[in-house]
Image 1 (cartoon, rainbow, N blue to C red):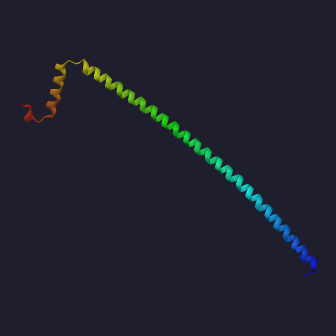
Image 2: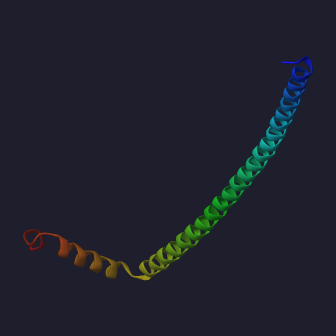
Image 3: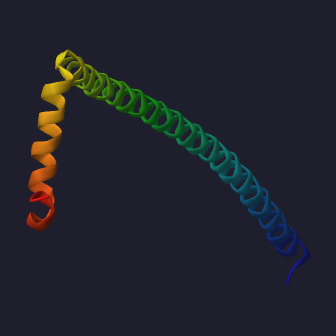
Length: 109
């Protein structure tokens, strides 16, 4: 090979190496931008999911509190009716229920 041709080949190899280095660096920058964008999207999704969970918990809590309040109100209502009954009526109700659950041999005594 002539000296001039060899020098041209070496120059072309250097240019190719520079282009390759340049493309590698450009690809790395692009990759870093993509990683940052994906991480930002991931964090955004996590934040959105956490907010959704918090809202769901709040709805469940409110629903449970309302249900508990209704149960307590019904219990108070029943307690007031029982409290308004006289002892004689309460004893009668107790004996009627006991009669329905006791064996017949015990009821006769």
